[in-house]
Image 1 (cartoon, rainbow, N blue to C red):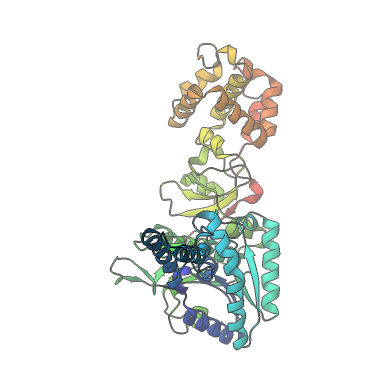
Image 2: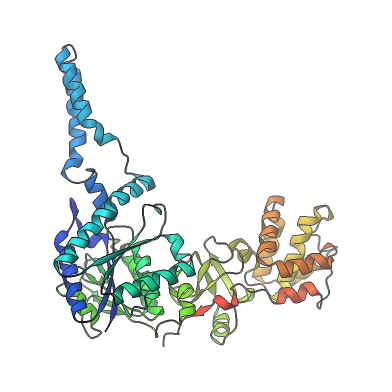
Length: 489
């Protein structure tokens, strides 16, 4: 038995005026055949907003009715304004036109409205198609807030597995009604579902047969490692929110978590059966790196939506693989804006396509940028200066002739220490307040030790002081959240 997640994208089911019903019906029929062969399939589907717009008559042939009626009203108004019966005609035409101007389906609100109409209709369609081939469906809607909760996704995984055991076809979709502004797309949801439901395979169905290495789509790529999937350049963005770049990144993340992925065409014959076979030649396969993650690692490792990226050096990577945590000296680059507790991806700073692991950050991005690549002593100097600027601004806290911590930071001469020194010099009082408040919230133990000790006022803390000892324990990633992926040989 194989547990497969199939992600059906907008480009796969888009037809000029709505949805490609032949593609959807064919896929449901294939899933029913896979179930009869004792396989388990979860379907992640797009199309709710598209169908909703169609039902609201803002797409397809009726989309042209509004502008045509508007022009007709203008003609009647200009040429026949004198006669009362013509005025009645104008009013009648304006009443006919009114429904076409009542709703604006542009922007997040338009997406939410269309999705709210399309979701029940889409599920009714799947229910009817599944019933025709002897299946029953159940629906699961996921928002970004669900993916940000380990407990919520454990529950979702349990529901999905239970539904499969009952012989149901779970149909999963991103909830654009409650989450219209989210950058989360169904490619990311498909990975989260595959990891949460302990699937072994994940297939992304799109409108092309594979990933290609050229714009002419002649150079088909049959197999990729996760690193290669993240690094490959693609030219076709595709239709819908995700596109091929999103699918490659999502497939790589799933592969790091032990889920083998296929990217192929929804119109390929027997695509479901072929996706279930590890020997089938189909689309582009992104090979799994290792086995499935342990239950305690699944949320951070594959489900949670990453809020940023931290680039680390090879020395830090070796330390992580040996079981250590990530200290500030190993952080070389910080991308994105995030708060403590956010999940971030750890990559090789020289080769960002190499995904090393993921973890929950112990500090906000603003603090990590200030302290990145600093040694423990340099971090202690920076914190001492920062708290002096906050609590004793009249002391001219950046004078190296008066304060040993400033002189020590300047004497070290590393690029990181120079950048930290320059940022402290340029910091406004408001910026100092923001940084110190963030530090107190993220690292209360170290900050309390520094403040209670009071040596930040003189800038002359001894190497063995409580503040310095507390700084030595500061790390960038919470120890118990770190997930280091298996190295690719």
